[in-house]
Image 1: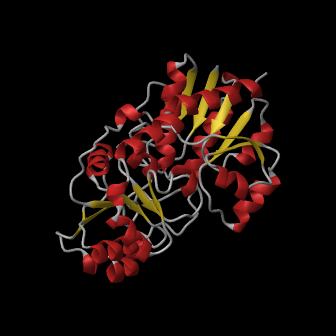
Image 2: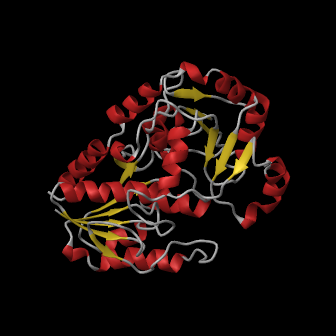
Image 3: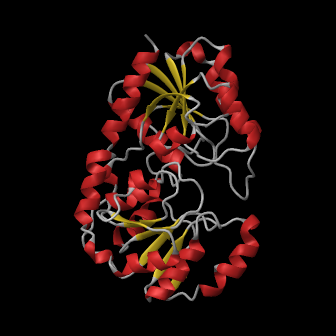
Amino acid sequence: MRIAIVSKLWEKSDPFSTGGTGALVGNLVEGLKKRGHQVTLFATGDSKTSAKLAAVTKKPFSEKKPYSEIYEYLNIAAAFRADQKFDIISCHVDHKSLIFSNIIKTPVLHTLGYGEFFADELALLKRYKDQPFITISRAMAKKFKFLKIKAVIPNGIDCRNFPFNDHPKDYYLFLARLSPQKGPDLAIRAALRAGVKLILAGKTSRTDRTYLQKKIYPYIDGEKIRYIGEAKFKKKINLLKNARALIHPHSCFEAFGISMLEAQACGTPVIAYPNGATGEVVDSGKTGFIVNSVEEITRAIKKIQTIRRLDCRQRVETNFNLEQMVERYEKIFKLMIK
């Protein structure tokens, strides 16, 4: 098949991306290429891929390069303008590709990888509800049950990129943007109560300045609580595989939670809040603990040794491997182009 894959411009799109969509798309592209398909990736110019790369911008959006919807739509338009070169266009830009769908004859598939939409975005989804959609979790399929959902296809990863480690070091890890929705302050409070070391890794934003100055920075002492900034792929892997557990106390709807999957692939249990798809990614009591408060995080920390790290790894290998994800997308593509 001749396949166009359209990705977001928030991060580079390859298997080693630090962003959830970037990693999903990168893995999907490489998996489809290995199966002999002709793939063109519409993404940032720094994306490392074996597919043909079409880029309208060299680098992802950042604090230095502010977000621009213009570039997002230029990227989508580039794929749709070349639609006759493809048998199918697979879009991973949530709602943004919908407005292009009815103006071409080439089949278009929309993957939703985000669970929170503004009112006008939700209205757009409802307007185009008969377009074919993929969700990455059952929780998303339930939340957006008014859509024409072709399949639920969970994220898959190549476990070869995530080395298993049965002998972690003496720290716990928070790996996400340091924002109120992700709950780093809750992780800090639990770590201090439990008397354990915590490493914080992730981006910060100027919009969260007051929150950071009040609830995060005063507790960073470089010993018990450390902040190391954003972790690129290799550093992220070292952090994940050596942590006693990943603490993920998010308050927002979790569409999937790729970091929870990556942690378990390394053998690292996850302690997470139950929002969204957490219960699909974490088997509470077997590969981590699903909790509801700082007190419960603290208790989970104290009994983390009851989780077998090999169980974490094996669950990912069995239920979230890359081959399964690629095969499911390939099956949907073939059905749509008949």
